[in-house]
Length: 396
Ligand SMILES: [Zn+2]
Ligand SMILES: [Zn+2]
Image (tube, rainbow, N blue to C red):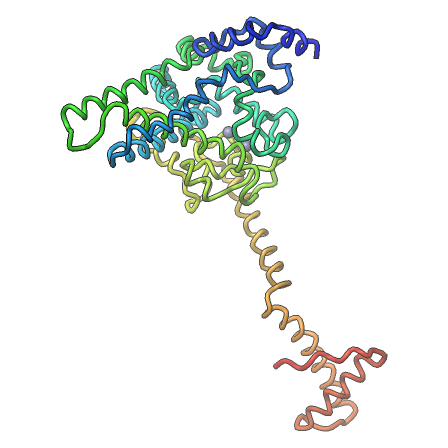
């Protein structure tokens, strides 16, 4: 707590100045990253201004209008960069589920940088921390600990979550080019945004039939697409621990969701992933759609990446076993509520009553089958001699 007091004692202007410098140099931290991380959660409004501007930029559609080209560009850039979030930031930098060359790794980091989700090392550090502390108080974005809104968007605005703890990601921090991209994490997004603007201007000049221009492509391709990309990704932090089915009884509340898998190109199989993180695929079975994995397979065929890691057969068997038990439990549950099963519950004791009645009737030389109604009366009297409850009607 003393570190919290020390940091909080910084004058407001100094904290604001620090935050502005951090827009450019995200490793600038005069208080010391350790002290900052020890602080309680608190939104740093100056530091998050670029993030606010990203959202406000979407309002630009009011002035720039829309064209089919710009809208489709936004959609395409959403998925191309969602692939970067899932296939690169998550499945490569965070979990190392495949390999590539050092130059290939640098290209992956550049691609990941266009997602505007800060540097690969910051992303990987926080994600590994999530797996270590899933849904316990240390988890920075657990909806069960901090609530939905904080898990979705609040946690990235907190001062204590801005620094990257390089000591926890030494396997990545040993590459200075990655550290540089992580430290100056606005460089790639600015170049990306400027490129979109330039492309739009070129199209306006050389392909006017497309009806687009630099500002329009900037607003749709960068601001709208990136904002949607952020919220699509953030759904995994928030929704994937709330919505869906739990195949594996992991020590957290991760879940599998087909809808989230569609939005995030396969990351919706989050319970699978929490069960076994080292696999390149999150959809463990063929029916669990995982476009990120399909894309990574293509990159492997092209020779750009290699060594994709499979799901162990023991884990697949465990999942199949869990699915089997889940389906049996679901059938039993349905039997308790389904009207046909309710009738069955009446049929079974009635059939038993008939069996007993038949045996008793033959022993007592009671009327034959043709005198059925008499049998029913006798049987009911024998089965429930002291019970006023009327017998179950025969259901045949
Ligand atoms: Zn999770
Ligand atoms: Zn993960």
